[in-house]
Structures are given as structure tokens and as C-alpha cells.
Image (cartoon, rainbow, N blue to C red; front, side, top):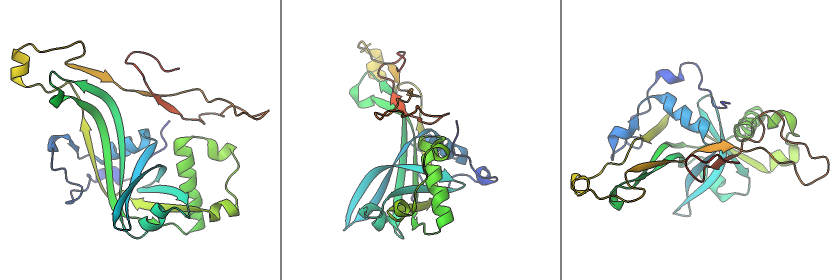
Length: 239
């Protein structure tokens, strides 16, 4: 179920080639299609917000949601990361690991991945209507359907919650796929081990939501409870 849908016309523009969003290493892995950005944001559940606090960098994981061309984050009004992130340059990263790459040399071991980096100046959302829409986007991205079935935030909870908005205009996407890249000398010598020259897929799936501990707690309605767990072994289903 897709929870991140780009607005009409958004995909007509390529990803922004700004100095901050231009790849300098492995440039062939850069994606130009803005649809790739929305695809990564749709599939991932957690992003990392990078801010500067008291002159030092701070990077924290958090859930997020996307509406149109804006990425929304939320947290406690007392969170120093959100207070410092408002009105200042921030960076948000999202990463999906698709596989581990085993090469003939440890130097060429790698990972197949899709990653997005968004730069910009975050703003604190104060409009009540936008705040509620942003919170709904965050809730329904992580646990689709929950906004309609669970109690929505009351005035006290809203007062304790800060929402940051970050425009998706300046962003980059980097993707690695395929087998290992071995040196010819290692290929010529026939160096190999039990797992050399392979890609071990890493996948994520939704597990069945479990009822709460209280009597009468229901299971998740509809598509609620979009929990994902990493496949512990290629080819072995997650239960």
C-alpha cells in the first residue's frame, strides 16, 4: 500500500543538481528521476534528522510522513533537535538495504542499497490544519489506517507535539545494484570462499500485528500495523 503519492507535475522535474545534492563519488549511481525519491520515501519507515546543536552535529532517527512535496517530522516540543532544526539548515537521510555483497576481497565487499538525502531549511508548523494533516501523514505512513481507527490527538497532546516541515526540492538519490566488483588479479587467482562472489538479499515484510496486553484489545484493522522485519536469511520467510 503506497502512502507517499507525488502531486501532479512533481515528477516532471528532475532531482535538483545543487552543490549539496550533487554526488561526488560513484556518480554513476546517482538517480535523476524524482520518482525514485518518492519510491524510497514510500518504502522506508525511518529517517535520520541531522541538525547542529550547540555547535556539534546531532543525528536522530524518527518516523516521517510526506504530503505533496513536503516531508514532515514530529516529536516532543521539548526535543532540542526539533527546536534547533526550526529555521536552520538540516539534512534528512533515508536508507533501504536490499542486499549484502560478498566479493573475493574484503575491500570490495559492499551493500546494495537505495538512499535519499534531503537538504533544506526546516520550518516549524504552526497552522492547526496543516499540523493535523502532517500528523495524519506520519501515522498513516507507519501504520496505515490508524488515523481513522484510533483516537486522534486532543488539545493537550497537540500542545506537547512539535511538527517540522522540510521541502523536498533539494534532494539526491543514490542506488547500488548488482554483483561484486572484483579485481582481475583476484579473479585470475581463483580466490573464493563459501560465500564469495554472491549477493545476499535483505528483505523486509509485514508481520501479523499482535493484540495488546489489555483484555479486549483488538487486532489491527485493515492494513494497520505495517511492521517490517529484516529477513534473517536469504530464502527463509519471516514469521
